[in-house]
Each structure stands twice: as C-alpha cells, then as structure tokens.
Image (tube, rainbow, N blue to C red; front, top):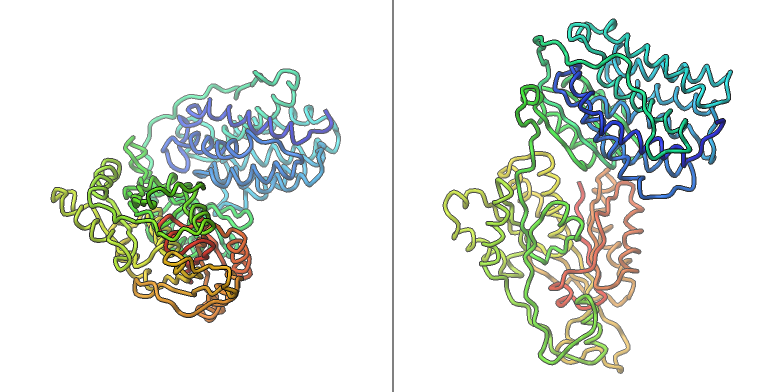
Length: 591
C-alpha cells in the first residue's frame, strides 16, 4: 500500500477508539506517573471518545475535512496528561497531511514528526521515560524509513518495532517506573493506538474484526510503594475566544503547579495542570477566555478510591420569559416553568409558534389580546422539590418583578418548604426579560461550571444585573385594541424601547423597518467607549419571527473584534404577545 485516503484514516481512528476503550483497564493498572491515580486509560478513552462522536456518522470528502472534525472532538474530550499530549500530537500530525485526498509514506513521516514536536511543545517540562519517548521513536523511525520504502505497511512495521523498544526502555529512564516494575502507562496507550492503525492498514479486506498484536511483555500490577503527591488537585479546562498564545498562558500558570499541558486549536484552548491552588488556577483561567467546561479533581482521593471530581451541585429554575434555547435547557437540566396563555374563545389560529398565531390574527383583523395568567406558586414549589432531588442547591432566576408576578410566587413557594430545604434555595429577581434574562442565566451557568459556591454566585449575579443592557424594536401594540394596521395607515411607526430598573420604557419612535440597523446603532452609542478599550461584548438576540433581521444584527455585531453572540432565538410566548410580531430584541453586556 503506497497511499491512504481519508477513508482509511477514519477507520484507523475509529478502531483505535475501540481498542483503547476495550483495553483501558490494562493501561490504568500500571499508571504510577505522574500520579498513581490509575486513570490514564480512562483519560485516553475519553479523548478518543470525543473524536469518535465527531466522525463516526459522517462522510468526509477530504483528509482536511476529516482532520478538522477529529481535532474538534479531541480537544473537547481531552483529559489528563496522556489525553492532552495525544491531542497535541494530533494537532501537529493532522494539519501536516495537507489538503490532498491521498497521503503517501513520506507525507506520513513528515506528519508524525510534526506531531511529536507539537506534543513536546504542549508540555511544561518534557521528561524522558514517558509517552513522548514512544512518540519520538516511532516518528523519527517512520520519517527515515519512508525515504527508503514506499510501502506504508512495511514502514509501519519497522517503526513500530522502535516504538516497542522505546516503551520497554522507559523504566530505565524513570526511577519511579523501575521501582513499580512497570512501563509508562501513557506510552503503552500510544503504542496500542499505533498497533491498531497498522492492523487496519493490513486488513483492508476484513475490517469487521481486525487482528491486533499486544505489547509483548505481560502487563503486571505495579509494586506497592509510597509516593508523595506534591500537587494534589488536577484542573482541566476548555476555553473559547482565547487571544493569548500558549507561551503567555504558561507564564501565567507555571508557578502554580506541575504537569502543565496546553493545546490551542484555532480559538479554543485546553489546559491541564496539577496544583495545590485549584481556585487560584480557576480564576486565572477565567481571565484568559470563556470557559466551556472546567473540572477540578482531588487526586489524593482518587488514589485511595474515593470520589474525586467536584460535581455540579446547583440546579437552575427559570420562568418561561427567559426564552432559552431547548439545547441549553436540556444540557444543563434546567427546569422551566411556563405561563398559561388563553386565546380568545372561538379563535382557532393556525401556526406552530405564538408569533405565527399573532401574525394570523393580524391578517384576519382579530383584535382581542390573548390572556396571560401569572404563574402559581405551586409550580415553583413543585420545581424546587424536583431539582432538590438532583442537586444540593437550587438557583431560581425569574423575570423582572416589575413586569410579572413570578418573583412573588417564587418567594411564596420557598416559604412553604421545610427550613432545611429553604436554606438550599436562592431566588434572584433578574430585573429583566427575554434576551436580558437569558444573559444573566448564561452568566450563572458559567459561574456554576467554575465551581463557585451558591452564595458567591448570587452575589456576583446581583452585581452583573445593572451591567446588562436590553433594547427592543416593537410594533405598536394598539392594533390589539383597534386594528391599528388599517389600509389607510401609510407610515409604519414602531417603538424603540429598553429595560431600565426592571421596567420597559419607551425611548422614542422608530420609523425605519431596518430593525437591525436601529439596534446596532443603539448598541454602538451606549457601549462604544467600553468596546474601544478592549471590552468583549456578549449578546443574545430574540426576534418575533423576524429571522432575517436577527441574522443581520448578528452579522453587524460580529464586526466588533471581540464579540460573542451566544444564540439567536424566537421570542418566548409572553414576549411575543406583548411585543407583537416582527419585533427584534437584543440583550448585551460588555466585560
């Protein structure tokens, strides 16, 4: 075989995922470096699982397209030293394969070398006797052999021999491995991946049950001995919107621990460190970029078999006016309490959303407004009990107390809980609705992911509330009362409004139908100075079945150098009724 395509590469990656998942316990039981927590196999399996989820059900037209998906999955799934080092290897290896649809032995050799270099660069203090030895031995051998031999399988065989030798030699290079009587666990995992790659290349005719050959030396459990853990906690974080380079981030975290690994792929960065100051690390990481996820693990507990990962212990309850997307609600197990809406008797209107129904009502000349009933405290009480079964504490974020009765109902429901449970429920008046309320909840989610305690989260959110801006362009609502949109009316007069001190206040007329331009100018007017000083704008856009204008506003906001549009969604039912169709709403905060 002198060339491979994206199809062979995809099979190699998928079967390596299966191999590591199957044999991860073999890797776990010899894990003594850098910490004897016996999770190296689990970490590699998690990393590979992230890759598998990105590619298994997709077809790829090129190596480049496949590589991009693999890297996205690896960065998301990467855990532990071995997982992040392997992701570093892929970050060097895959882009080097180029944009062609076929890869020859020489190209693979160059790519393996780049993979080794990137993996080494990702580590704070590279050491001999680790996974890097196996990566280096295989990569350098493959590059040299590819100059003499075109057949990829033959080159793989010869290079794999060198990788085996390097693995067997790891105890001679690291005293802790020699004392334990084992080889390096991460190195064994990487060797298994390479073996699987070769098996797929050899057995193209029968890929359903590829033959594997295992590390020749029988893997045994390590000898028991005392090992002092110098840095007790492992912190792993995935960030987005990172503008600093790896060197700059290393300089910020170097003094706080060891086993610091950093991988950057485009605007996303994975950070791994062992430390005795996990919350100081967390706070520094928070300033580097936006946290997608963060894990703090007590390795001392893991070594003795106790639960080690700090799990999320705060459940969220919101009312329907926040207008969060279904994806966010499902992902964070958020309990949403809906409002009851009663349409005028006899008016059976077509449409899947409230906005569509309102448009139909307008078209038919119907003028009676639907009735919105306040949420009963009983629904909040039921939600509290449900979330307290799953979480240690509950954070309830409701729409502005000046625009709804939800805050009062939430407080009454809390008073009906027993005293012990009352102390676990924390209620926040968002002083907002729609996109503004969504932004506050997104801030709460980030603080929860950072493992902040519930009282600190409440304090921080209350400080954030005044910083949130919300502007609306609304249709005049008088048509509910007298069919305002008569044929004789030539000028479309809309309302520009904002949320101030929890109330919706009109700021003037808006005669243009370019809602997006109106709001962008408003945003620029209010926060231009902060943005010019380097502030990052985060925004949520909601629209009353006006997708085109919403996307136009999103594009305008993207012109800012540091802009994050969290999501674009259709308005919630209550806002839809009050704002009328075709409205456009934006909530934003500048940090």
